Image (cartoon, rainbow, N blue to C red; front, top):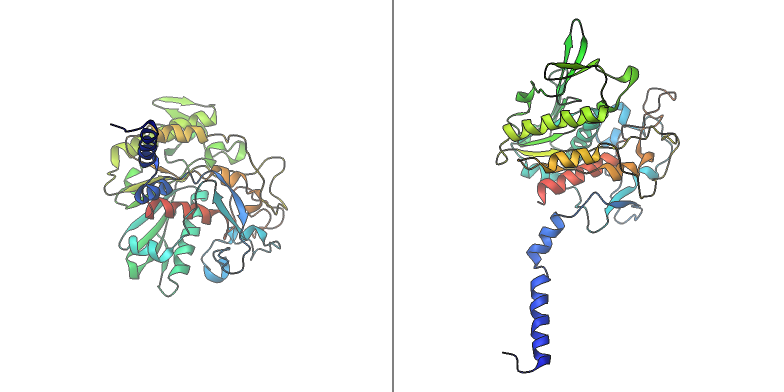
Amino acid sequence: MCVTFQLCLLLLAASFLWTVSPSSSSSSSLQQQCDYSQGKWVIDDDPIPSFYPLYHASKDCPFIGQGFDCLTNGRPDKDYLKYRWKPSSCNLPRFDGGKFMEKYKGKKIMFVGDSISNNMWQSLTCLLHIAIPNSNFTLTQQTKELTVFSFPEYEASIMWLKNGFLVDLVHDKEKGRILRLDTISTGNQWKGFDVLIFNTYHWWTHTGKSQTWDYFQVGNELIKEMDHLEAFKIGLSTWAKWVDSNIDPSKTRVLFQGIAASHVDEKGCLKQTKPDEGPMLPYPGVDTVKNIISKMEKHVNLLDITLLTQLRRDGHPSSYTGRGESYVDCSHWCLAGVPDTWNEMLYAALLTN
């Protein structure tokens, strides 16, 4: 029982502080749960130490695809290389390739997705290579869709499997190309991996000559016209059901790359040299991804990269793809560049959580 009213107040205050003040372990947990998706780009121009860019593509990683190596393709400005992503309420852990390789020694990692997935995969292989430059690597094109980057010393492989929709795209002699929104027949290719990073979005938004299907199909019904984002929702739900039915979380970690913004709007990306400033309008498809993943039975880490890519219209290859000045790419990303931040987020998800 309190002796005085003032003493009671002191005891209550102490009790309250003990309850809400996090211990060191819970502070670490809060850091791991930090929302890396919200923040801003800041220029990293301190020469001691200066970490950005994290590598020089043609010098450090000659295997980088020509379309991503903007400097070699003649891009004259350099500031786009110096930006780092600063989350609003925490710090994004710096990528440590040596630690990554030690953790995933003897493991297999697979990216499954479109060319934006390839963008992220090439960034990761470069980040790992520069961390262990004296370790031999092999790069093999095993099939038309599968490319494998391996470190024999670590018995580790990082693969990219090209698959733009995740659901089935089949060819019918009479009907042509049919996108089956509710079937996945290639899922066996995704089994037996320690980490899977899935991606799909951009191919769903294509129209006209760039569209790669003639019909949608759901069940036995062929559909000539459908809202593309509605089709994306059905297809992604099919993928989510596959993961819930086929993945053992004790053996396989699953992540979804998230939607990278493209800048094929009126302003475009040609001759853009600085990031945009927020806030940004909601990006089509993002709520669909978040809603579907939140309802899955198996845990999937969402790498929410949409805002940080919306702000970086300067980060695209633009006319520096090596395909001539008339070809302007405002969908993919220069390397070094924005995809390195995606892999810093991947690193945070895999090694600090």
